[in-house]
Amino acid sequence: MKRRLALATLVVEDYDAAIAWYTGKLGFRLLQDKPLGAGKRWVVVGPGDGDEAGLLLAQPGDERQRQRIGDQTGGRVGFFLNTDDFWRDYHAMQAKGVEFLETPREEAYATVAVFRDLHGNTWDLLEPK
Image (cartoon, rainbow, N blue to C red; front, side, top):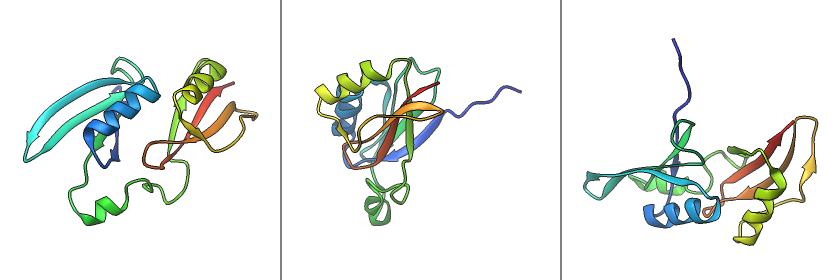
């Protein structure tokens, strides 16, 4: 049996603002955007053509979910964006206004730097060794 992780849900304040941020700042593609009724949508963005894992962008359904926006992992880095050219993507993201929280560093496993998304969730940009 072949299996893979397909999606991770990211609770966002607004579908369109999140689509604009992920496609404009990170260069992700809008892979799906389908109405579900009652103002809900099935919105998937991802760095590739859809064969890799993507993010399901979801507006909160209640106040408890709304309170998790920007802090879905309790302050830990929750998302990891691998690249084949760290410096290309780092400079492109900086030029588009992505906030990096540290100076890039060389680790045994990767060149890495932590950045924030539009809601404050933290990500690693990594070029694995």
